[in-house]
Length: 189
Image (cartoon, rainbow, N blue to C red; front, side, top):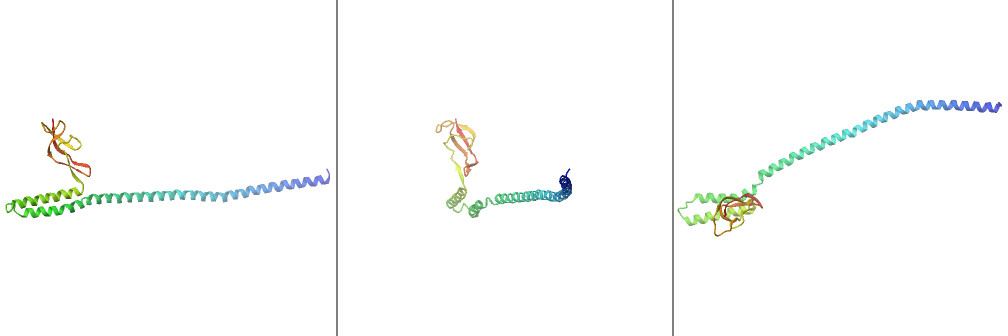
């Protein structure tokens, strides 16, 4: 071997030694880097749990808001039920006042004026109830409808065909299209 070849081999051996030292340093540094990287991973894990806690707090807040909403709507419904008839009562109070005035007078003094006054009070009451949507169910001479009529008897009738209402025993009423009380009727046979 020539001196040049020996020199080149020494350089290769030194390069290999340096390379193995660098590898071992990188390995050691890599371990340090892994520890440094491990800490951020732990931080990332903590950060990852924070959104879960944040999600939990959002859930709790949403649950509390929903419970408050339920309480508020329940109170509003109770208020609506309590004061739903306020307008109707306000319309009927003058009728009540007129009945009190009529009862304070004697029918014997002037029977015609008394009857006329009672008729006016009746009309006033009907107007007040009509304003809120109460309507009499027209029954006489119509086909029997079990949704609107309550048949209590059959009657012979020359005036009405079979299945028609021939007598109204008690008037029926509906409120805004919904039957409040069916008419009590007799049906022709």
